[in-house]
Image (cartoon, rainbow over all chains, first blue to last red; front, side, top):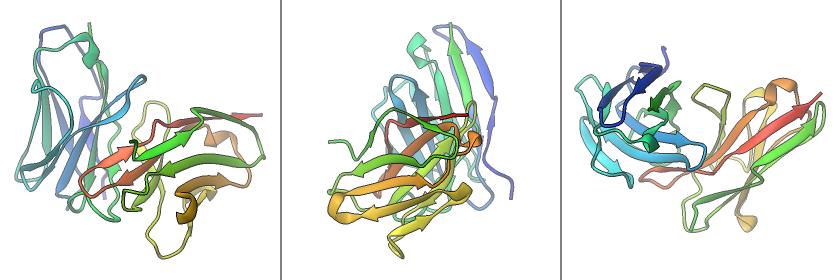
Length: 115
Length: 111
């Protein structure tokens, strides 16, 4: 099976702009989670989608949003970009909702740089 | 309180030496525990997970971890370090609502 894919891999944006990142989960996986990874804060959970519904949300401002399509592909959007949004954004898929022994499979990430 | 705590943000070992990366979990969370590895400019890769079938869990690349409920620990070990083991290692717990990751341990292998 193909792994989790994320596009684009690298992105440079200017403060105030908005950005959309895309994630295609492993075939058959219905859960997609998003994380922000920075050197200072480590891995922080953004949100999880399962069957097109946001199931869980981390502690991020409303500028961060996401959605999931019927084919389980997911997008996340960040509006009004700030310098502090520069990070590696990781997408992870799982065959089921977060819980129990189900592990998450990660994509390679999108490196976002805000200037 | 942190759900998982990784002691030591940086660990250096000589090639061929024992690797020990420490992880303690909060007793308030269910013990759905995982170890992931991240190589530079890549996503996280699952090394192993605890499923309650056995307290000693074997993973990929020769790594294993032992679940010790009395110590609330899930330390990762490898008998003999290889240069290719140099990476960032994350302990994680699945609370049922979301995954919580430790702050990571950067492993350096000295030739």
